[in-house]
Length: 116
Image 1: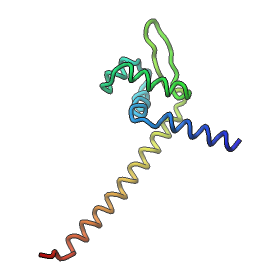
Image 2: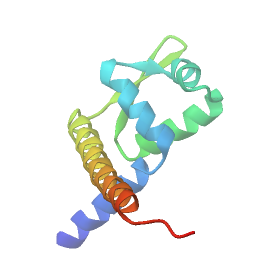
Image 3: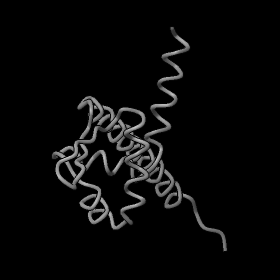
Image 4: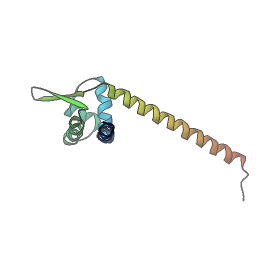
């Protein structure tokens, strides 16, 4: 069972391992979108948007609903937004750490006499 869970997590994170897929998921926070809406929003070809949506759909991360000639995509489980928010928080914490290191470097440079 533990191995199955680890495999699921690995495959799940692989499905998220593309900037456009992350952007698509963030865009779906506000509701359903079509491939054309996604391609226009992110300036990509509809084929590229469809390809990325297919990856997310194959892993059950997004669901598709057909209405007339349009296919509307939505997030299957809204808990994905908690994961994306946690990733954003980790990123922000990383930036705070990097900023602190840069400030220390600058301080050291101002305190160290320059050689000529």
